[in-house]
Image (cartoon, rainbow, N blue to C red; front, side, top):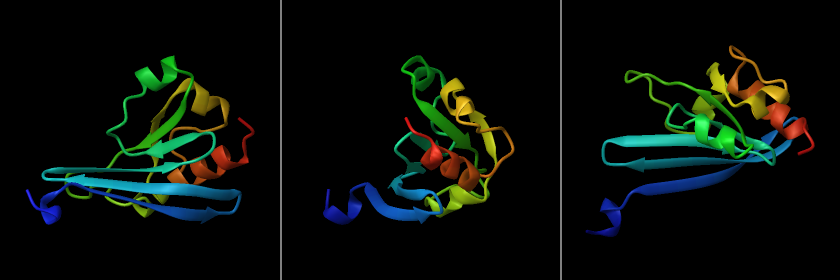
Amino acid sequence: MTAEELPQSNSQPMQFENGMALGTAQRWCGGQYTSILTKAGIVGCGIYDLETPAEFGQAIAIVKGTPEKPLCVPEDLLDASIVGMTPQAKELGIEVGMTGCEAVELMLKSNP
């Protein structure tokens, strides 16, 4: 395997109204996922399971792409609608239907 054939993993700081977060994107042959990591939790794509992080007290909110429009980079999460969350994310005010950007802002505003 050459370096060009390895899976890709990228991260970048992202500025929001309520602070900074870390955007991440991972890609491999046949798949990808992306997320925005804040001090309080994660806004991510539908690859994230909600049951396990809820058990560990983690705030996770997810948006869902489609095969026609996959979520590949953190910026893809910003305008997408939240479709699910852990109870801990709900406690931060995150609701189904709000945008990923709104969810990130609530996480950044919180004091974990």
